[in-house]
Length: 168
Image (cartoon, rainbow, N blue to C red; front, side):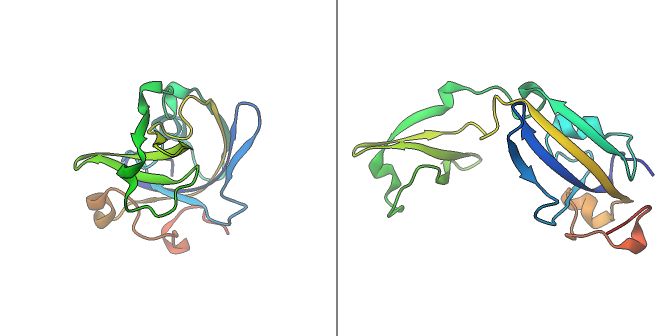
């Protein structure tokens, strides 16, 4: 069975930037990624690169910013009056908040704080970076009707009864 539309895929990955700095490692957390292929559960460039591959394959996939989280947009870095954070009793560099109008909300990260203003960045933290994924495909199965209805896997793990090539 290969990775195609409407299949649930289980995989481990190491994610590094182009300089080799490790950014994420699912194996170290013993938490494989499970996603529904073709439903925008993962970054589009990675999903396209995984298409048609099978259980047991290992791949090294390099994604330019355009195929990953996009280019950085400095217009998304803004200074906001500190009093806009009335509900936050303590602000720290790196804190993340949901901001914007209903239906047009973005996650912003605090990048600077002073007495009067807080600088927030609405870029994805990996925007502008070339990313390198080292992927091992663990399992593939057909999605259930319920999973197709919600657009993502419903169970955190894939039952060995339901997959071809499952291994722990």
